[in-house]
Image 1: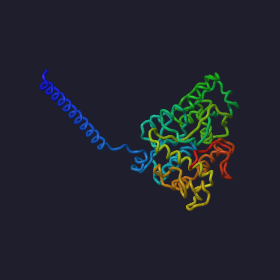
Image 2: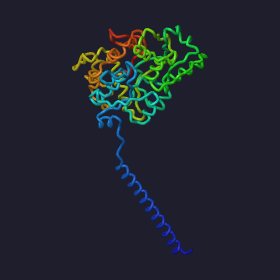
Image 3: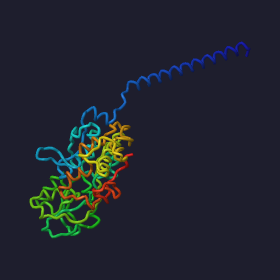
Length: 367
C-alpha cells in the first residue's frame, strides 16, 4: 500500500469518528435539554401543610358515638377528647381550632379512609398496632392508655370474665376488640357466641335490648355505655382487661413535616400541663423559667419554625383547647374515668406540683 493511499484511509476513518462523536454529543445535548424542559414544566408536589392552608380547613376523621371521646351534643356539635386533639392541630396550623371538616367513619371504614389520602388526621379511639402503622399511616403519640373489658347485667351473677363461659357477647366489627375477643375465646375455651355489629351504637343497643349477655369494648367505652343505659346500676363492668389498647391520633404516610407537626402539637398539650401552663394563664413575656419560655416561643427553639409553624405556636394551641389535663377533665373525668393512679397520669418526674403523676403520659422533649 502506498503512503498516499494509507494517509487517505486514515483521514477517512478519523472523519467518520469525529462525525459519530458530534452526532452522539448532539443527541445527548438534545436529551438533556428535553429533560430540563420537562422538569421545569412540572410543578413540585405540595406538602400537606400547604394543602391544608390553601383549603383553609383540616380534615379530621372522627366519630360521634363514643361518650367522652367523640360525641354530638344536643345542638349537634361534635365534641370530645379526640375532637380536641384535632382542634389543637387546627389551631397550630390555621390559627383557628374550629377550622375543621369532620369525616365521620365507622370502625371498618377507618383503614380505607386513611389510605385514600383525603384525611389529614384521624383521632377516633384508634388502637396503635403494628399492622395499622404499616398499612394506614403513622401514629403520632399515645394520648390515652386503655384496655379491653366486659360489661354484664348484675342479674347474670358473674364477677369475672372467666365466668362468662358459654355467653353471647356483642362486639363492634372491624376493631381490635373483635380480634382480641376471638383470641381470648380460643385461648381460654370460653365457647362464646359472638355477635358482631356495625358500630358502637348498634352494639350498645343490642346489649341494652338483651340480644347478648355481655358487651365488650375498651373499658373507657364501657363507662360511657353504662351511663347511657336505663338503669346503670343494673350493670357491672367486670374487673380486669384482656388487652392493652394504646389510643392516639394518626396521619397519612409520606409527609414527615406533617407527621412532626402533629407530634409536636401533642407534646405541647402534655408539657403544657407538666409545666403548669393552662388556657387561662398563658404568659406572653419571658418568665425566667427556661423550659416554659422555650415551649411558648419566648426564647430558644424546638424546631417549630423549621416546620412552618409560628414561633409562639404553643401559646395558640393552649389558649384554644387547654393543656392535656384540661382536655381530660373536660371530657373524661365527668364520666368517672379517673386519672389518679392510672397510666393516663403524667410521668413520675413531671415538674408540676398539683397534677396526677405516676403514669405513662409523656412526650419527646421540646428542645
